Length: 200
Image 1 (cartoon, rainbow, N blue to C red):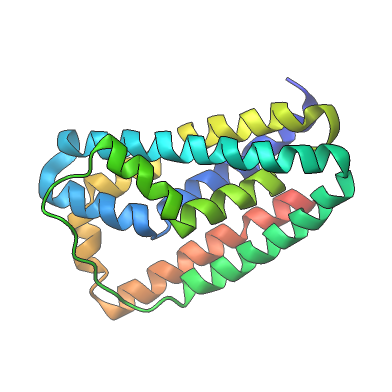
Image 2: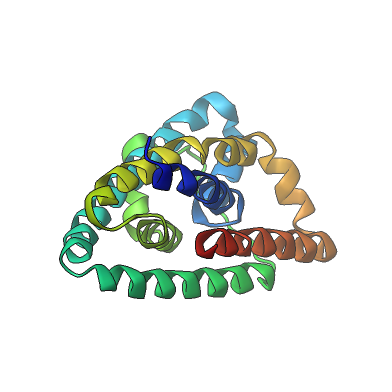
């Protein structure tokens, strides 16, 4: 594998992992489903998320790819914009307030979970950020783009199954304001640590 691609892997894997571990619409629904329906009945939900996010990722890459190929300077512009969003998202996570969410009493199907990604702001934000921060210009654009797709389908699995497995435990502990505050601060700081790796 190209050396430039190898250098992307640590930061990319950490970004994907933290993107999945941090609280968001998918994780809230997965925790709810894991607590109420168990691992087996939540698997279609997991598969739907992966299918939906992969399709969304490809669509984003197809649109951005041509721009980056024609105007490499735009890649740098979007990189800094995406970095700014990560800083914003880190602060938003770190200082998020407590909230509750009530969902359907039936587990999501594959199609429902896949379709949900089209309106999930965190999916859009994560994939847009990854598509700008972790893609290379020129001939390495598509190899790095496919590396991003693979990473999102592999590195995100530990976080996904963590939320299913300990969903009820996390849900109950997040009702404690002190635990909730420190958990969010930790997740925000970890997400922020992906930035220095990209600019070394």
